[in-house]
Image 1: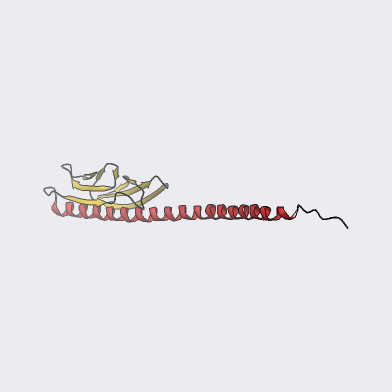
Image 2 (image 1 turned 90 degrees about the vertical axis):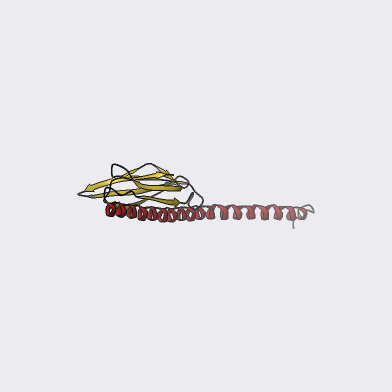
Length: 157
């Protein structure tokens, strides 16, 4: 029979405490890492959804201005002012208008909405009878007006 050492019992409580703290820290860090990706995915979905809503609203305004310009003819002046949100899901964004094709009197464009954090790009197609001349837009007030050339101009106000 081996003799028992009297000093081994005192080590048990501090050792258990250190092990408990270590295991708790490991579980907590695993939980944070696991939910971090989930939160980023949710944020990206929210930004994408918000950009789609903004893009569809701007596309509706473009087609409305285009129809008004067609109905008023060359003599009519059309100006529509609309308000784009400053940010989507708390993130700023830019809107550019890219021409895809021209077929007869139809002009096909993509409204390209881009958020930088997280990197999200949404394309919303739009068709007009009037050529669109646009600058890069950010959130806020936007004016859609027919120029003296007969083009539909889209600009920040």
